[in-house]
Length: 370
Image (cartoon, rainbow, N blue to C red; front, side):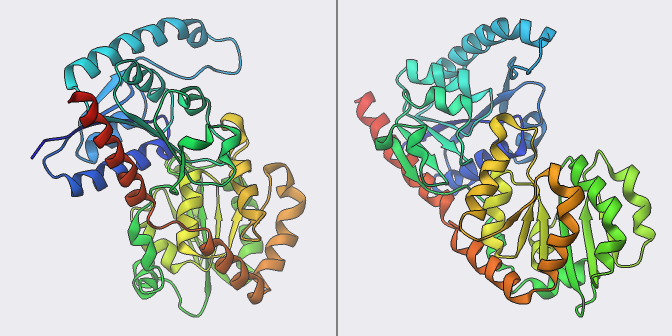
């Protein structure tokens, strides 16, 4: 039996890294003898997260262009040329059967060189508004796996396959894990639980909002699990002294936190949106306005358009948060409606669908080599 070789590239943020790891894990389960190599940006979080997941990684000297004139921007052409050369060396040495890109700047040079060497390639776009790297690669790759409808505005329609975003399948068991979630976080089963998420590093605007509105939230009869992020834990950990409040830097059992939650406040990164669809709870999205091409707002808008979530922009929090939040907490029917509607958007078999597309490229790779 042939030993397949896969290169996966994506990084800069968890939203690009975790889908790549999920795809690698699914391919490994199907092809236990396969060899895997990840390619990322040498100074970004993938250099730690990928080895922690058990995979080798090579780093490229590449980073995004800043919006203002910086030394890093002036260096960009040199970084790009260096990354293209190193990508070529990696591909010639590793000889992959298929290359998979999940977005982020490192995947640009790597997939560019892979397609030049006629290696079958697939990209996975997590967002409802395509990233610049994936838009540039779209004409050169064979398959484009997407999570939203209407992506033909960015990509050639004949290459698009709607698969959804790879997510952890343990999130499918939120109902049966509820008891375990309440126990894990030592929660009162007679109170509703608000879960607040700002990503692994934390979200400044969400943290400031909760810091300011905490008493108002508690006055609605709620208990709170507040994941403030590692960057902000020292600033907010004193709230752990408040009854019915738990402030955590990071939650390592997200499946149990989701299971225990009744209402969720979250950023609207693509991975978060996909997870929350599986979970099927009422969500208030507060998208980050600071991400490339305002992806998070567009992701949230796509869900709100299906009457499946509430969205509050950061600029609206001062005036809109209290009335919107109070209205939602006081309306059980609305909570159930939002939870049911977001669950309809879930695509739980996303990773397996992507693996099927990769398998179709393995056949292509075999034909090329014969």
